[in-house]
Amino acid sequence: MTDAVITEYAGAKGGRVTRYYQYTRNGIRVLDGKRILKRLYLFDPSSNMMTECDIRREDKILRRFLFDPYGMIEETFSFGHSPRKFRYENGGRQIVMREGGDFGAVGKTFTFEQQGISETAYGRNGEIERVFAFTPGDDAIIERSGGWYGDVDRTLGFEGIRASLFSEPEAFLQFLMFTEMSPTERDADVQEQVAQIRGESPGSAGRSKYAYTGTRHTPASEERTAGRAPVRSDVRAGAGPVASSRTRSRGPDDFSIDFIQDGDRSPDDTSQDTPPEPKRSSEISFEERWKNSQPDPKKLSKGKSAEISYEERRQGRSS
Image (cartoon, rainbow, N blue to C red):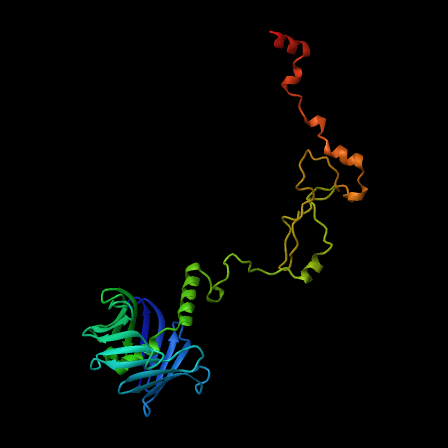
């Protein structure tokens, strides 16, 4: 007998596959879009219980869901996660979820209607948060946000099993538990989509696409290239042109930097090849300091007023 498979699509059916659910007699295997096992649920019909186990160790229990005629209680075995209790009300046509047990605050309300199940968060004044609509073909459940005509968040397609199986309260609670996505899984899915949009590989999420990915410069390569003289491009008597550093062939381990001697010197630069060594402050005399602080008379222009003689100034003042 072939196991039933529930395929979860992001948005409408036929879109990007986010998860697979392998529904068997013994339990449910939750796989991501690459068919990698992410969660494992086992059934215990004798005790009317569903258990979430560690995918690496099936004997390690992460969560346990206990069903009774009044609803379901979720037992958590991880620190910081409070239990949730679901109770049937209004003749089984409504489920009320409380955080922390029987006397916890009301978190959400699930109402069974003709076309599906609506979810209302406490404090929204009766406004619907999302709905689970069963398609007429009984082969899919569409999750919409905001109401019966809201945007399609995801679609679950059924193969080998009917969607209406989860229209009853107890079965719907099972469906709700194994299809909910944890914050960690949600963040991982978002990061994967961001990486695909940026054109990065799945393992490079969070790393800049402009990062250097070539061979790194190691100390060993520095020793190999140490003392290497720059190659000049000139013509010798009786010999052909010597290959320059720009055109010489490079090996895979050649990490040397192209160096053109005097390449950054201007044609009018007549300064010495090596600048003078700087002096210590105690070695500089007062006269040298004073001379360096005075402006250079060669660099200062006289200005137009210096061309006017004293007599011309005096005549202009007396007139």
